[in-house]
Amino acid sequence: MITVDGLTLRRWTDADVPALVAAYADPELRRWTRLHADTTPAALAWVALHDAGWADRTRFGFAVVDAAGGPVLGTVALKRHDPDGPRAEVGYWTTAAARGRGVAPRAVEVLTGWAFGRFPSLAAVDLLHLLGNTASCRVAAKARYPYVETLPPEAPGLDGGHVHTRLATGTTTPR
Ligand SMILES: CC(C)(COP(=O)(O)OP(=O)(O)OC[C@H]1O[C@@H](n2cnc3c(N)ncnc32)[C@H](O)[C@@H]1OP(=O)(O)O)[C@@H](O)C(=O)NCCC(=O)NCCS
Image (cartoon, rainbow, N blue to C red; front, side):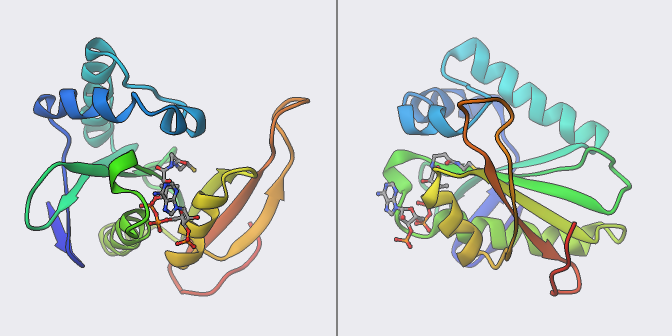
């Protein structure tokens, strides 16, 4: 558990399943994310996926709550395809009710500091978002993830995306 800047980041548990299902009832959240925990079985699988990620060190996912308590405000996760490699990716969302209060940028900032402190091999964290997701682009800017490049669409008719990257050194170089 991490408490910094008015937020607490803690592990997801099965007790969060109703909050997950409620959060994923929001079409905007489903629109911009790939994993959808919008039913009780899907939410239980979502928590299990996060538990497995902690166990095999490929996904370090946190529920984000106000440090003073209250409902789940969102999630933030560090994804590591190679648990001992130099790169990782950050992912996040906030519930519809929690948006517009800077929760996501603060959570990303806290997670990034934690990650660089915890993993000595980690040199860079990437933040990827689809081109149309201007709110997520704002999160990148506010969490100090400089823009690096624009990726082409994965298939015709789809959006491409932005890559923003934070380096452990605090400087930016191309991927
Ligand atoms: C993108 C997202 C994580 C931003 O989280 P947040 O905690 O609201 O972040 P902020 O409060 O810093 O707001 C970021 C931007 O969202 C927009 N925004 C502000 N209030 C908003 C609201 N009530 N509802 C929706 N968007 C809002 C603004 O463009 C804002 O930028 P600004 O501060 O320059 O005006 C959140 O909108 C979300 O979860 N969206 C759906 C899932 C998603 O896109 N995840 C990221 C995938 S890459």
